[in-house]
Amino acid sequence: MKVTVTGCAGFIGSNLVDKLLSNKHQVIGIDNFSTGKMEFISNAINNDKFTLIQDDIKNIDSIKDSMLNTDIIFHMAANADVRFGLNHPSKDLNENTLNTFKLLEVMRNLSIKNIIFASTGSVYGENQEIPTSENCPFPVQTSLYGASKLAAEAFIAAYCEGFEINAAVCRFVSLMGPRYTHGHVVDFVQSLKNDPKNLTILGDGNQYKSYFHVNDCMNAMILLAKQIGKNIKGFYPINLGTEDGITVKESAEIICKTLGYEPKFNFTGGKQGWIGDNPTIQLDISKAKSIGWEPKYSIKQSIEDTAKWVYSNL
Ligand SMILES: NC(=O)c1ccc[n+]([C@@H]2O[C@H](COP(=O)([O-])OP(=O)(O)OC[C@H]3O[C@@H](n4cnc5c(N)ncnc54)[C@H](O)[C@@H]3O)[C@@H](O)[C@H]2O)c1
Image 1 (cartoon, protein in one colour):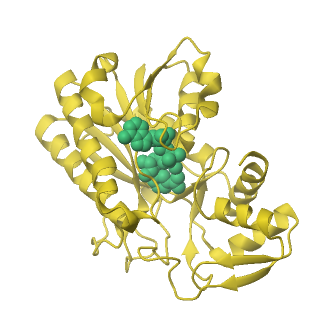
Image 2 (cartoon, protein in one colour; image 1 turned 60 degrees about the vertical axis):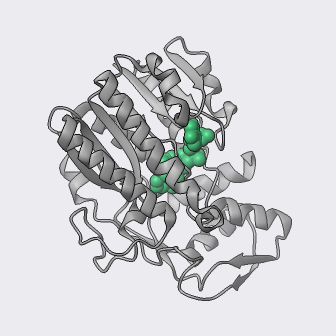
């Protein structure tokens, strides 16, 4: 199969490239290296089946010929940082919504029929339904990131309807594992390296989150790739996460125990870590389970794995 992976040098994208190459697929990778790292694709670069296009999706028209005959696009490129959206309000719109629209236009022009899109559980905002299913009523959006991804989903849905494309729209909870570069584990580990005696935790520490491991995510991507265009047709939103959850304070305790730190925790207070932070995230993953996927890693294992990787690599 020939696939295109946008954001191929990022945390999720680079793990995906390695997985796809190990399954002998031909992979076209696109990345502008805004947050991606060349070292993450160092193995891929030496594989004959991998082609790297170092460019920005906003220039997709000039590079689209390399995508001819693509069976599936995995669209992972985005501004993935939820927290700093308010510092640059147009960034999420440009990177997450408009670039997705540009990619959809390329799909239409090149008759590419399948897309697997990295959406997010953030689109559910502060939902009343916990665990949150794909069919829940949509609440008011609480972050520019969530809004931009939901808008991208809306364009994808309309293209599915209008141009008969198939889209597996993956609403991920936060991912963990090797090549993790942004999120609370990085913040905590870097803070502990600078000051082993104190750890500042945003909010009251009771924010309840669900995390899942990037290896589990990769198994889901491969499963979706096998089913898209067959039993997955049209617009297909799907939650990916774990059935358990953990508070931010408990996560901090696991990180400290894993790395041998015993700091004093200082809480900034309030039920949110920052404006737009969803204090409770727990997705209903029964739809994913019904198509044969199930996470293998516990949240504790995912956090331990990530803490060790971040400590040694960042
Ligand atoms: N990491 C998570 O916990 C998480 C959770 C939910 C959803 N997602 C989504 O999954 C996807 C991947 O996230 P990630 O954590 O790997 O982020 P990341 O920042 O590590 O990866 C994004 C990659 O896309 C590239 N990129 C960004 N804008 C680009 C552009 N305009 N043109 C070309 N390349 C561009 C970056 O250089 C980077 O390599 C994103 O769409 C993100 O919104 C991630």
